[in-house]
Length: 196
Image (cartoon, rainbow, N blue to C red; front, side, top):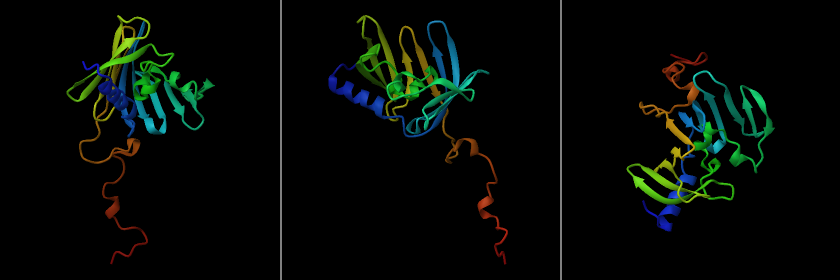
């Protein structure tokens, strides 16, 4: 573990600034005091859009980024988000996709703060110290190159994101339109086009 301030600042910057370039789908595993759940998520961090469906057949939650309203199964939740509430209003299913929503940065209301960093292979791990008890630690691991968060572990919380890999065929995946339609559509004659 590297406890130097310089390396810690670089690691924190990567964790906060990266991972928001593109949309992705994945599965999030959450474990807390008395629960263990998994969710199918679809996230576009830069657009502040997300949806999360509890697996196998649970409810779905989405956010309307224009109105800042969270919906559960298509019905507005009883409150709208505000700038003050946003960091603390993300459901656990999408917290890893929005790192500032996690209470691990040493802010006034945060439970943890980064104390050291370590690069291991393609990942960087921040060691987290508890703000109230210096004998309690956690960890926050993210992909070093992309900044995408992989895990958050504390004695009371375990969050893990497994992203779906992009298509291997070199083509772009546009979600619901991927793989649909006629692959030869571009080469077909149009109805009013002279084919002679």
